[in-house]
Length: 276
Image (tube, rainbow, N blue to C red; front, side, top):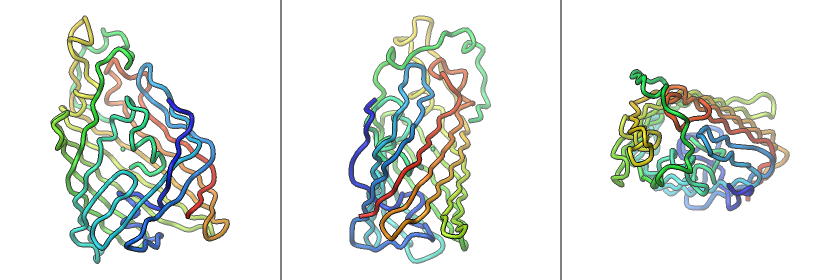
């Protein structure tokens, strides 16, 4: 993968900033910022390269109801309320492990993504399969509804998205809690959440077809994927701040899939954020 991620940046993310109590979002204009520093996004798949994070973009635009936020587009159904409903669309983030320039890799610090109830003893007999040996996983466009409830410094959110591009023909849903807290001038934003991913989604991205495996196809069931994130900023002035970001995504429910080398993916970054 490329060692440099570059571009324009915005001050917010679709799952967070549109309801971020700590952001002063001005409607009708672009919000741009850029993060420079050192970091990495790990790839848990066999043969997948970790992504170095050096120059990371964020870009957003908020109209009265329409918004674009780091690769996600949406339409707010009830913008002036503690209960925020949005119609949203974005590229499915699972493709980021197979495609270098996926929006989830470009906007690495904003993304927003298991427990499997089915077991298959066939998995234990299968050797690991590198992603370079697989057929190409196509980009998929997901669309659905997101909901946010704001209570003081806490944001509770839920979303459900389905494949509208006909690529994997499945769906995913998530619940998340996020808090916005200040410790002196330090702004801390921890998040806890869990994704549910359907059988069709997991089979397409992490299953193996008969063409890809001479020992036969391997199916993957539905899963629950917990995650935890923390983002911290220390303002230096109005336009600049020191930024720290750490995210952990659990893929342990899919550990039996021959594609996985690790049971988790992590994103870690420390550097400087400049708002234009």
